[in-house]
Amino acid sequence: MSWTELLPALRAGDPLALSRLISRVENQGSEKVQIMKTVFAWTGKAYIVGLTGPPGAGKSTITNGLVELLAEKGLKVGVVCVDPSSPFSGGAFLGDRIRMTSLDAKPGVFIRSLASRGSLGGLSAAAKDVVQLLDAAGKDVVLIETVGMGQVGDEIKKLADTTVLVTVPGLGDGIQTFKAGIMEIADIFIVNKAEREGADETVRDLEMMLSEVEPKKWRPRVLKTCALRKEGLEELWESLQEHRRLLEQSGQWMAQRRNRANTILLENSKEHVLEKFQRELEKDELLLGMRRRVDEGSLDPYTAALFISEYFLANRT
Amino acid sequence: MSRKIKVLMAKLGLDIHWRGAVAVSRMLRDAGMEVVYLGNQFPEEIINAAIQEDADVVGLSTLGGNHAVLGPKVVRLLREKGMGDVLVLMGGVIPRDDMPALKKAGIAEVFGPETQIQEIVDFIHANLKKASAAS
Image 1 (tube, rainbow over the protein chains, first blue to last red):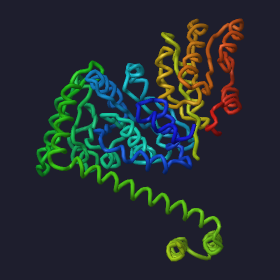
Image 2 (image 1 turned 180 degrees about the vertical axis):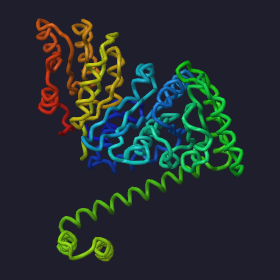
Image 3 (image 1 turned 60 degrees about the vertical axis):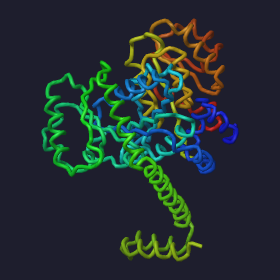
Image 4 (image 1 turned 135 degrees about the vertical axis):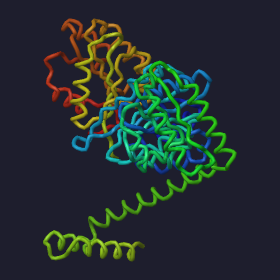
């Protein structure tokens, strides 16, 4: 079936059409740009929430509980779970879905597991496109679960309206909270497995850290959950909605949609240029000559790189 | 196109023997495939997951004697939902006498406990039905 035939079914909420379109985009099919530019006009409505945090903190279990709650409220929910690809075999073991088996039968819920395929930063290269497709398919809320990670992860911030950091008691003392990076990107902090010893201490450390940063319009919330027992999830949804309302009132909601379009613009431009560059690099005699000279050792790679990039840009037409 | 073979691995019904399914999942991962591990699930839910993941292969692990009913049901539901091009494989302890009926019902191959992983990998590469899937 051609991609154009899948579009009406996508708009009607057919999961198979959505799924097949995701595959074509994820696999960098020749029709990828056509698909994405057609669905772009239908995007911008979904509320996009990112969940990040160390492996084993409970991101998938929280996602499961939250999606159950939202489905009961009659909301249509899309979930994107990213797990790492092996740098050696290129394969992946995608193990988030096993925490969400109660959602396999829920109408309106669509879960897609993605392998990171070499992408750093906790997402996969296709994640932002998959989010766009879920948005275009009419999902009210899209949850993105990143690769389990610790201290980086600004990619999710670019994509999500609200970023949630999931942590657990006992991962380290208060010093960890002073470190730059992931602590600065979260709008909501969750201390999961809150029945464990040290939960209140972790909450206190986070609150302390937050009290020392310059006050902004939104003061990040710190919540306790026990996701396996489905405790604290209503409160999480309340905080998410509160944050969303603030985004809408302050104009940030629209600004984030413009930012996202801008990110797509920049990343796709880079991709197109890089593709063209790589093709040139394979066939242009002068560029090949430069590479040979570096191979032989008669030219250093820094000088060659400068020459190659300037030559490529000068001859780009 | 940077196509990866996507495998959905599930244990049929209430069967608790997880080690085999996890071991095969790991080995398929090492063969460069993307394996979604679903754990225990019943046919209807397996189908929903297969649709959402756009699986090329569905692997069903069974050691509990429910293969004769639930296996063919997975194939039938896949066909009903327009996913007849998915390769359905079965593994576990399955009596030799049951194999013809399973194959007749559309299970592409049944792998017993003695199977070498390379056999499964080769079988998948040789028999992928989806037009879009490449090695």
